[in-house]
Length: 236
Image (cartoon, rainbow, N blue to C red; front, side, top):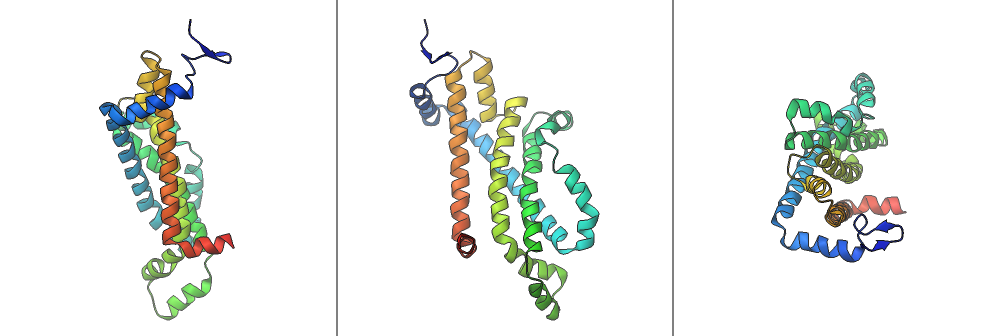
């Protein structure tokens, strides 16, 4: 007869003494799991990179050009609340269950924090900066690159840090729901559906949590190193 923790059988809720060694085994010697982890991390990196490439220029445009912001804000506010995972069935019909679906949905979910942080950072910028640039006959593009972007950079970094967490969650959830493509979410799905290996399910979940913590900590430390002056000012 299987032992239990409280009211739950250990087959359904393995103790940490089982889960943590299993996680160490997966990281130490399970080639398939390591390949799944690499697939998830690469998908996450591509999604965050694409989100930054899309959101930063668009945020500079909407934050600097008032007519463009007025024209596009309704569309942006309509798209922003749509859950990325809710679009999964549509994208699976269009793109299939491969990496393209994961990247598209994670990019979509990660765009918004970067976009709005960039826009609102420009709202807080002293108009004197742009007036000086205009007096030196800077073009709008040069002003955006040399004045607006440096001012918004600390806020953009915060948006990227928030987007990184969101993108990782969306990638794993899409893998977990859709299966098919290699990834940690697919590993968890197969472990839960086959022999009901809850020790592997929880071990994979713990590893994703640790990965998310390390990513957030690394980005936070990078942000403090690059924009320490802004962090110090906020702490004051």
